[in-house]
Length: 343
Image (cartoon, rainbow, N blue to C red; front, side, top):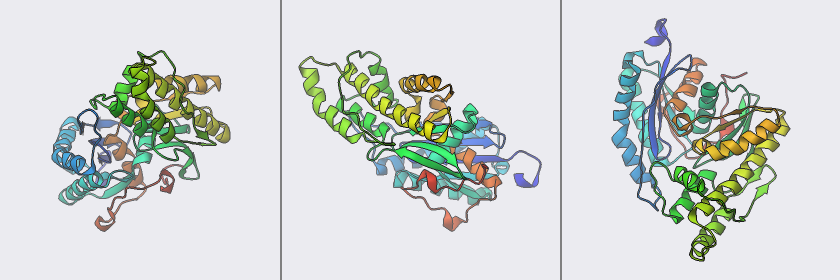
């Protein structure tokens, strides 16, 4: 095994908590050797269901493992451990991926490490950008949280009290019948660039928390009427939705920065790819004399390397699982993880 030689430790990570399945291989110095993934794309106006998504992951899992090994130029006997997404996420897709991880663990005789999906995003962002101890805005299709590290846990300072920001964007994309390829949120971002008229929408910030269900209900109900009367274009509505919900996110992020006394922000999660969100956050961070850390779609969007890296960090601290412990869960909060690899 690799641990018995002087070769660097390598971890293979498998992520499949939503509609993307990814397999990544990461070296102990943080170098990402390979990171292929595949997305389950549904027709315009439709979301993705757990059963069909799980079948997609089952079809692609082994292909992506083979591709990851080939791109990294490594063989199974060089893999030190296998990391999998323990949660949170969709049940069927999570189970499909953990079954593959268990199979490989037994075939290759290497230990397993379960990883929190949210912590995976944070650690991926930190290693790619070099951010040390920023306030983290985690924004995706399933999660919206403002996080800061303290006493070996990623503490949640604020979050959505209903739906996630990415879910809000995705569901409005269905109202406009926008394509799901490459992603509905991306297509809203592109259409928003053509909008110029700001439609007033509900703005709901409650202390450190935000709510997106009201703004979604309002714009879902008003969209077709506004378009039919010529009072707004689909581009105007996308523009207005982005400006409103991103302003809410910037506000609670700034409040968390003031609370913990830091000027740096790291944006992670699939919505973190949105350049308008990055621009708005950049203005606020510069006013506070800080630095904004963000990544592109290679690392913001769900991928295998984001599971492999924290899995390797945990493995180096002696955190491995027996086969019977390798369960997954749809609910697994960021602050439940005891972060042994940070001071």
